[in-house]
Image (cartoon, rainbow, N blue to C red):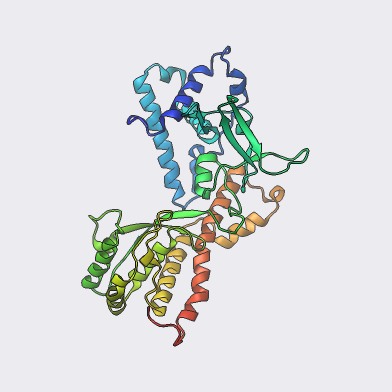
Length: 375
């Protein structure tokens, strides 16, 4: 990517080419331009303040605003390099084409060179997982080829897969969300990237010990200039165990650890492997439990965090679930409002999972059982 642009060079080249040639009636691609969608209001960068308000409580609002500002900066940079560009293409035109290219392009390799391409008809296929087709560029045929992975019957819709993504990425880049965003094995792809703090501790000495432990394990805060109890650590949150969750649970174990528990853990730390899983970034020692009671407090603290976050939404979990259960023709929702409610409900389901987990597991961990001993 050129330092002047925040978007990749390949995508920017396609965006500018479309904008420069779209008004030429004799351009080779004019028939294609005519069938591109005119309505892009499903992309959240075009949502009104009222529509964005339906997403209140979600970190995705910041991502939407950041993405729009990034595109606006790219537009201004094109205008700076070519002042006449602003007279043929205004900001709205640029944002529209940038969104269409971003959501419809295919990254392919042509004669050994990676390029960004728009492929008529192929870019009309809707998303589904697991994938039912596979696409590639065949150099020997100099053609873009879509191959079926399943048997289709006459009249069946042909789908593409936009890849395994979290709903915030589907919303941001494609303008839709998936109601049940799970793999065939039940693994839910929805993820939130959130910030957590160690918070106030029993003593400054205990707080310093905890921060020192995290630092020794290469677990760094976002901004070390903040007071230690306010320093933020970024972790993903999802339903169930997956990449990043062992690290998050380890963080909460340290967060709620008493001085005795921490000293006990530190005394055994050298005996615990510290190798990391390159595929997930999880460190082996992050899977180590400290004690049953510590684990109960860990889960309770995480559940309390989730309860606090749940209160920030406009509509609560059960109400959103009720709305989404109403038949579409009777619900009276605009397309964007339904998208917003579906998205928020998918985030709330993650919080609810950890709240429910704590309610079931904590009583078990808090019982006096000789088989549950300190690690």
